[in-house]
Length: 274
Ligand SMILES: [Cu+2]
Image (cartoon, rainbow, N blue to C red; front, side):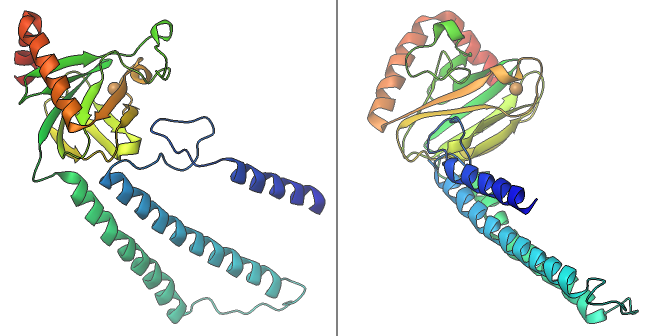
């Protein structure tokens, strides 16, 4: 029995060692832990997660050691006549106070992070995101650009497009700029989430939520709607292309020229900003 247990334990450890952390801006097969952080917010989330994981492991080890000690020291064989007392004031104060102190210790960095995610004072750009059943639409209100982003079907995937994550139009954002993000929805609740950027914000009908992002490096970042919103909830991904500020300016110019020619886009913009 003990040999079988040892083999199972060894198997578990080997699985843990083989499952390398997912270092990419999209989900990876067998990916564990978190995606490689690509924004200051995500770096802070990774740090806080590391701190809390260490605290959890220390508590786990302590509890198992205590449990083992009690099982050995107070077994029926070693301790045939158990003690009769039931209360110990000092012990009860300690096991109430120590967990409270641990929670308070965790609360400080958590609240600091929550407030820093909340909003940015100096935004260079605003992106308004609207959730629909089942796609996202985007508006750059100050630049007058708007478009819908739909899932690319399997047969239409281009090289480099991940299945179920690529969209026909990409959200293009400049690297190194503080971007204000506002979310809303026009039917049910959705949630706009991009793991590598540390973004996850609900999109409610009739309400405008706000957060922000500063992307650290160029690349493509993928996310998914993270609030169950109907049958095609799993088919409304988020596909962001982060480019240099010069490339972003060029993209803006190209899009503005294209949109000024098409009347429906102007109507969409008016609709979206209503
Ligand atoms: Cu949704």
